[in-house]
Length: 114
Image 1: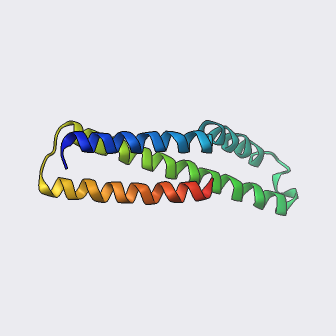
Image 2 (image 1 turned 45 degrees about the vertical axis):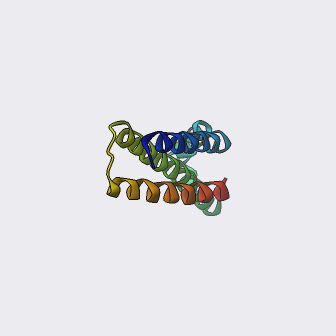
Image 3 (image 1 turned 60 degrees about the vertical axis):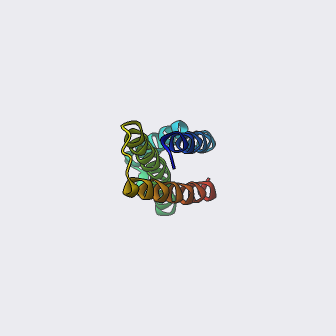
């Protein structure tokens, strides 16, 4: 696989990740976590333990979604840098192909969690 093909695949990955970001509405998820965390600081938060538990669960689930997206974004950015500096070797090609497979699996996972 040549560098142009790698760049093309990374561009496709980037488009897919942008689509996921829009579907997840990552910015609003972050705002939601902030709002929920403010609720946990209220004096009467634990008065209703079921509601408190539900709130904490939502915070954790939402943070995990955001974190999974951010890790995937970071790994894509890292691979893009490696391709840009032209790390051309047989082992790099294997690493790249493994990255693409792993990326696609993680995208599928994120799609299922939206």
